[in-house]
Image 1 (tube, rainbow, N blue to C red):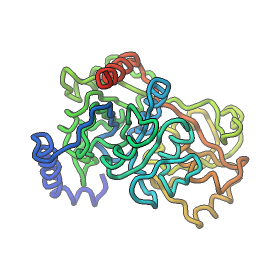
Image 2 (image 1 turned 90 degrees about the vertical axis):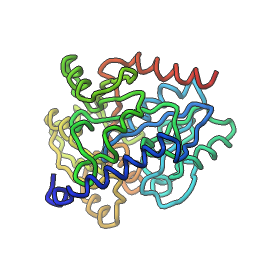
Image 3 (image 1 turned 180 degrees about the horizontal axis):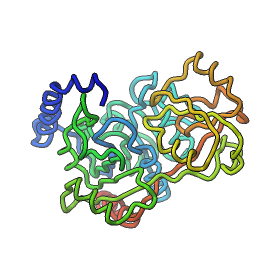
Image 4 (image 1 turned 135 degrees about the vertical axis):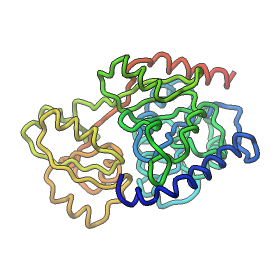
Amino acid sequence: MNFLRKILLPIVPIYYLITWLRNRLYDIGIKKSSVYDFPVIAVGNLSVGGTGKSPMIEYLIRLLKNQVQLATLSRGYKRETKGFQLVHIDATAKEVGDEPLQFKKKFPNVYVAVDADRRNGIANLKTQEPSPEVILLDDAFQHRKVKAGLYILLTPYYDLYCDDIVLPTGNLREPRSGADRAEIIIVTKCPNNISKEEQLLIKNKLKVNASQLVLFATINYGDFVTNGREHRSIESLLGTPFTLVTGIANPKPLLDYYTSLGLAFSHIDYPDHHHFTEKDLDHLKKQSLMITTEKDYVRLASDFSKETLWYQPMEMSFVDGKEKFKERIFSYIKNEIS
């Protein structure tokens, strides 16, 4: 906790009260939420920073894309456009945001849209032909103007929401009691070898209710890097110095992974969703070989040759409980559609 956050501690009770009262007004119906007669699944978190929302959305897309007509809706963080935008594969990150563009490039047959007003975004998506049967809301846990039919809450293994306090001293966007809205709670970015005993300890710390499904997930990095056209094995990078370029909330897991493999790399770290300036690009063009994340790649690819810039594929996977997750998702969708 830095000094500024410490001195802002007296503001914490005020922020807590405001966010608690807002949620309470929605809970008792004084503030109104839009409810839908088709499946709407919201993925989000209580804390600021990276909890693995994009890998979770991609996991859901892979799970559902061949079963239903699917759409995703994000706000399009840091885009330079306003209002509803249907994402096309030839869009730019400045127009639609980096993560929505990443979704569209990987899943071109899925509707991907951006709109800060989720109600307006849902209304516009439903006018498409064919109309989406299921809509995934990305980073919408606090967007109470829309009431999703199913909420998936993410919390990272190394920074559980139960160990935190609200802004501005802590990282929580709302009080920990907000977790009660979630049907599924996923502890993300766990070690691959997390034990059953530790899982039980964490579940007890989270103090979930009997109806909430708690699962544990990890990040799997591909054994290759790619430029979208060809692959290069991680093994081939041994002894080859390169520059790792990241503009994500928490690059530590990727740094730890590369360090554990004994790779020789330097690291250039930018803020999450960073818009690369001409000065940034001039600096990066001095690097002979760069590896970045997929999210950063969609912002940088047009400025570099495919021989120079590569990205590290990664996916979320469950440590266990994958079938329980599928059962809960498909049961919800079946009940809503039938």
